[in-house]
Length: 325
Image 1: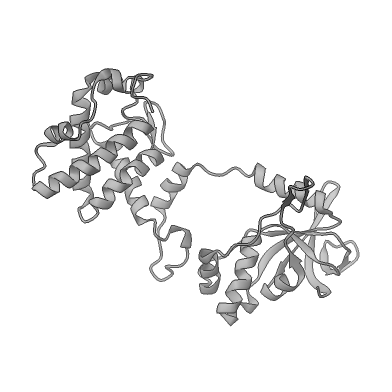
Image 2: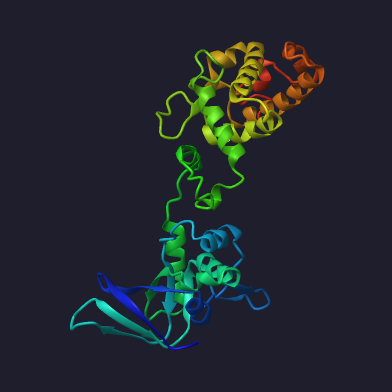
């Protein structure tokens, strides 16, 4: 650990203060550490509180390509002495001097990825991450702060995340700007197809899907669940355009619902178009599609359903009935 002097701002939150500053890869590598949670079974004692660092290729790539900013602060705790020297008397601007190891409370993957990125791209040496340093901590204070950060953050619903991802415009000149969207083309396509199925007039899925950002009246399955259940089928049909996929899905489900008419009239009273039923029947739809394609015949879905021996009795699909998973 080297004595470290950094420009900083004091942040006042009632009786609590902390310092905002920035640190580069060398500073984070030399002056910070992780206190991992370890349980000792033999004497029922424990130490630490955090996870260990595991490499994050997406973050390393984001940093090495410098495709986008990472504005979220690393949170560090100081169990030793931190002195603050204001630029002018009573100013909240100044410098801090740190004499002891700083402990990572939050942001271990961001800070670790920056250090990893430096070994790949030397130009990353000047790359800075924002840092919040909490003075006068001990392991218990840090443990509480760790829980406060990780237990009180409200994660956005996955359906909203998928919906927003579908609206995101990717700059072709900066393809690494959103590494977390890589390899998600199929998922995003599934979500878009679900939205179109939900809007098909008189279709078997019209207004039956709870779409993020829209009124949820009448919906019996979330867009995320339905899209996930459709993904294997869409992978089989990925060489077709969306209209052909939507047509097949609607035809398949029209046949299924024709076998249990009350499920079409009162969908909430049956589990057929809820998550469990959609997962089962979309898996069947994938198998039926393969048979249709093999025979080059898509006009006999109903007969093929009989071949795969799906139970289409009302008793089976009734909510609370014998077929409930």
